[in-house]
Amino acid sequence: MNPRVAVLVATLVAVSVAALALGPVSIDPGELWRVVTGGADPVARAIVLDVRAPRVGLALLVGAALGMSGSVLQGALRNALAEPYLLGVSGGAAVGAVIAVSAGWTNPTVLSLAAFVGALTAVFLVMGIARASGMTADPRVLLMAGVVVGAFANAAIMVLLATAPAEAARGALWWMMGSLGSAQWRDVARLAIVLAIAGPALLHWARDLDALALGHDAAAALGVSPEAASRKLYLTASLLAAATVAAAGLVGFVGLLVPHVARALVGARHRVALAVSALAGSALVVTADLAARTARAPAELPLGAVTAVVGVPFFLSLLRRMR
Amino acid sequence: MTDKSGTDKSGTDKSGVHWSNVSVRYPGAATQAVTGVSFTAASGSVTAVVGPNGSGKSTLVRALLRRVPLLEGRILIAGTDSASLTQRVLAQRVAVVVQREEPAFPMLAREYVALGRAPHVEAWGADPRATAAIHEAVSQAGVHDLLDRRTDELSGGEWQRLRLARAIAQESETIVLDEPTTFLDIAHEMSAFELLADLARRGRAVLAVSHQLNLVSRFADRIVLLHRGAVVADGTPDDVIRASVLEAVYEWPLVVSRDPAIGAPTLVPLRRRSVRPRT
Image 1 (cartoon, rainbow over the protein chains, first blue to last red):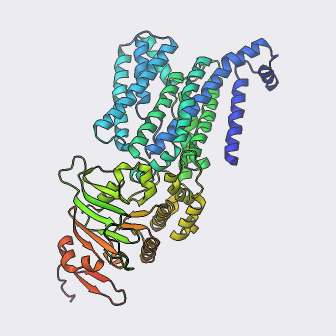
Image 2 (image 1 turned 135 degrees about the horizontal axis):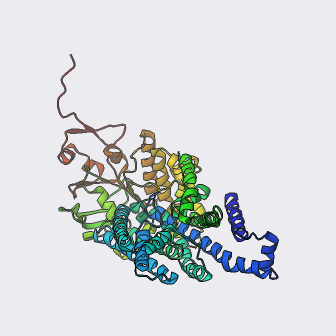
Image 3 (image 1 turned 90 degrees about the horizontal axis):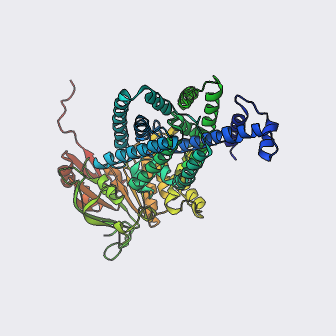
């Protein structure tokens, strides 16, 4: 294994173990081992298995999904600033969630579903606008359509929040900042299913992505039909992003930053870069969530804010390296 | 049609690529980019497509790649209508070096050349020919020294040669290049065309879109001259590289002579306004 990837995997394991061990009640590694093997104290067992493990599990999956989604969109759109929420996912999900909150549907499952439906609606709207322009797969058109739908979503959110009760508005804002605080095994299972389908599909299409990253004419010359390949990649990447939004709200910066980290580690070939993006995304979100719940405990910081705080310096150092 | 080696390529020979009465109109455009274009890029020879800017040269290449739909006509690949092939099979049969191509994110030159094998491999499949084909392509294009460099560190000329290596690694019967010598200095320009002639000698059909009329005159077996989307001349360099033909198309005065050292018609564009002698 590439030594850099080995370091990444070791980091991922270390932060995951730390995230299981650390919190209001610290659980030492010996006790953690007994939780796994059975025979631990029932309180420690409940803390690890019912509270922290689903949270860490969800962080792993959200990070992996956002990392892969961002990597796909940067490659297919040939744009270093592309990220998973670009094609309408964030705006659509937020509109869906705000509508649900305003309507008083605060059940977490209903909220998730509303966000998911909102995200997919926006993605289809973006693709529809691109299609109506006659340039379905042109990255520039998709970017513009994404911006337009995002602006429309923002307007809708402002109108909805302005007329919503204060309590609902606050709830919606919290949701938009992203959190793994209410993670349950049920959420882990749902996202795992989506990732188990979309992840291998994206790896399967990695060579198409390599070709698309050269430009559409060059992709055609390598036997990849650019429109069809782009469409399936945009949809799958956006589906992954929408599933993370349903599980954890908006977790910014991961999908933008992680693909750059992955390329710096293993180069631009997408089969490898996608896999490493998943690992790096997991490591980043687990670390950020650990920081979010321990930095100012017992208060919890919004996860999206932490990923940005962690991400910005990292991103700046990457920009320096690119020179 | 007779190529320089004297073998007859006419009549029933179906190898190579044949554009048959091809017309293309870009979506939303008022006029057709090319109209009723027919010509053949035959196996074992170098065919050049020349013409002024905007005469439809690149459109013919993009039509072959199905980047623009045909309004009418067909493109036949060894006698088979290209519309009946999948994009991937098309890429197995015809390797194209498009006019503009830039990796969105830099990769190693050797990774880029290996992409030429993509049309031959299933997503998770093995490619037993890969090593040999890449090795052969690298040595033919003379890019061995570039392999460990990153694509964003290459000069324009090095990148152009690397793209040629990628196309050779595709191991297709036909190789199509849209302005292969852009960015190349005279040494690399000559060696690129010598390589193309060599590929043709080994039996491939080579089609080059070019603005370099003098190079084309020396290396092409056949020249197709386009003007405003239509073929205005199609024949040997001696047929096409003639002042009477070219002046009308390029709307520029020029003379064509025959340099005995080169043995091919040589074109010199003239200055249009007489220059007052310096006092």
